Amino acid sequence: MRVIVCNDYEEMSLRAAKLVASQIILKPNCVLGLAKGSTPIGLYDNLVKMYEEGEIDFSDVTSFNLDEYYPLSPDNDQSYRYFMNKHLFDRVNIDIKRTHVPNGLAEDTDAECLRYEGMINAVGGVDLQILGIGQNGHIGFNEPDANLNTITHLTDLTKSTIDANSRFFEKREDVPTKAITMGMASILKSKKIVLLASGRSKAAVVAELLKESINTNVPATLLNVHNDVVLICDKEAYAGMSLGIDIGGTSVKFGVVDGLNEIVYKDSIPTEKNCSDAEIIDSIADKCAEIATKFPISSVGVGTPGLINYETKTVSASNLPFKNTPLVKMLEKKLRLPVFINNDANCAALGEATSGVGKDVKNMVMVTLGTGIGGGIIIDKKIYLGRGEAGEIGHMCIEADGKKCACGAVGCWERYASATALIEMTKEAAEKEPDSLLAKVVAKNGADGKAVFEAIEKGCGVGKAVLDKYLNYLAVGIKNIVNVFSPELIVISGGLSEAGEALAAPLKEKLGSNVDIQISALGNDAGIIGAALLCRV
Ligand code: F6R
Image (cartoon, rainbow, N blue to C red; front, side, top):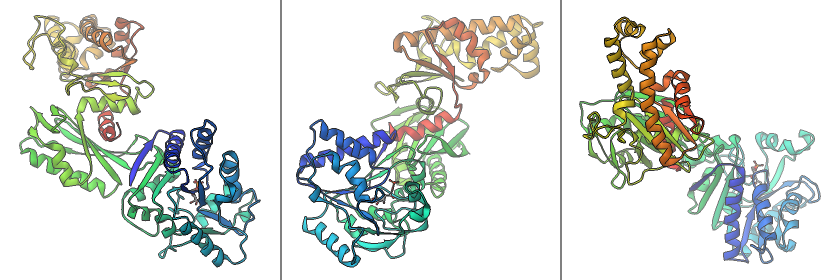
């Protein structure tokens, strides 16, 4: 089953309409299978618009609807015939005689079912079948049952379907309890099937569908035997969850991310360093397999430090046992799921751009202030990789003959503006001014990234001077980034971002109002969410 996940109902409706339109353009005398319900209304509206704009012509199209309530007159405003006339047939140039809906008033329902099935066969079957899906997994009115009926038949509606349909009727007692519906075989013999699902209420059943197993208690899962089905759904209905993995120096974090880009489950294992790459990947794969027994995982995304070759999908990292390790291939072989990979800082930027402070902007740069300075560049909501290593902002030179960096170059930004650099400055100042409040904080708690902020809070002038010098360096680099990318937003993350406004407010003052700076909203979760979302960008 091919899956297209759309942002919302409107996008889903348009994508579906484009598929139906191409079918009509390719074969003007095609046979369409149509559905009633709240889901396809947007699709029908789009088809009407395309017809009005002269893009499609329904004059040779034949249609068969999936079902009709029984007993119900076609004139009743709750009948499926009435719905189809109102939403589509009366608004386009289809020949009404070529539109078919089971007769909800048939006296002999067996004969009506045979007649309907015979008519579908007589025109050579349905070319393109549109389906909605019930919360209980029904398609058409093929309700969950140990024995599914194959051809068009009269059926009793289940309580859950009657409950769901009661929203269209004044009183629950008015909802018909029976319907004539195409059977599973009638549906499955269609040449192509487009299944639509929208909204949170369909997420559970879509998750069942995506497990790709067949279960007559969720009739839609039978679509998994058809070779040309496309599921078009919005994010809320898409429960094909992704597993995001964030490989760090001390732990490997795992998070299951749902269609709303929210983490629904978290786990972690310690990072084993004194082992081979195969061993570390084995332990990651074991944890993934364990999580996949609890959630319908459809893909895995990995954020890793180090250098990634995006062609061979191999990783080399100095503080992990990865040396040209084919991480993607090894995980895919073990998990039998598609695996995506990207740099951990890029993943964090993507996570923040999708679900964090960057969710309303298209272009942003994330600056991660930790041991070094990491970065992630997001352009048009996508990770910008350049030739593969874009985003290494910590190694832009801000001092031509400055301090030596571990990368071999001199004057790299991270030597002056990382958390490590702030700690160095703190230590130096504390040594130089042993009577200062800063020196006292350092003597008590040690020189860490928090010391300077604690000292400032207590009114320490030395601490203030240290932060000011540090922020000058930080601002220089950020100005360079702004000059090159002109992003809508700069997001500060990493250990130092925990200082929050105590860091952001004076930094904003140095940068002026042209630059929008915000502290990461997701913290460590950004990397997990971004990794999980690699499959969708
Ligand atoms: C309609 C049909 C049903 C609906 C399903 C979803 O012809 O056969 O299977 O597709 O009940 O209904 P909505 O779209 O209202 O959620």
